[in-house]
Length: 169
Image (cartoon, rainbow, N blue to C red; front, side, top):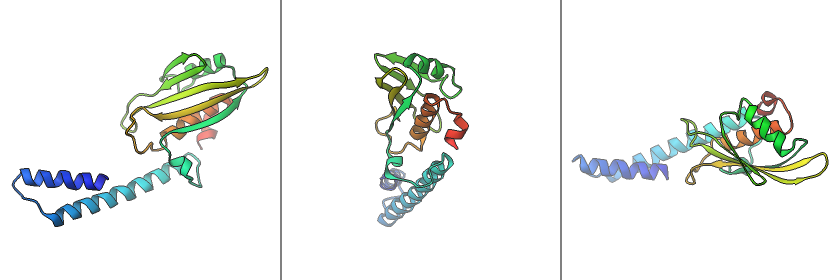
């Protein structure tokens, strides 16, 4: 898709700039750029997944929306307090709506920002079950570059009272 878009853009630019249209140049730009970008993205995503401890890559790791059910000893009130004080989440926008905790990350060079949702699914005397999901703020995002997996791991570390360095390594 990227290669085709680049090929079309470059061809239109050539037409406007009086260089004319060349089908051979269109094919070269389309395939060279498309294959080059595809290979780079595959390499980059594999490297990032390995950096966060995922050695065997599965289809679920490549989804743009990530979710996980997590058991915890933390109540919702305790969890919100930990989220507000954690180095990894204290700068996120944190809202409580009903039985949900909503977090959002800011736009950056590496990310279009993510929406993290923590839903309290069930509770008993000593444990709580949460559904944690993370997805891009932009609906058109085709790749998440492991940001959503990292977000899930951060929340999971907080819910389990783990050391975050051990969780992301």
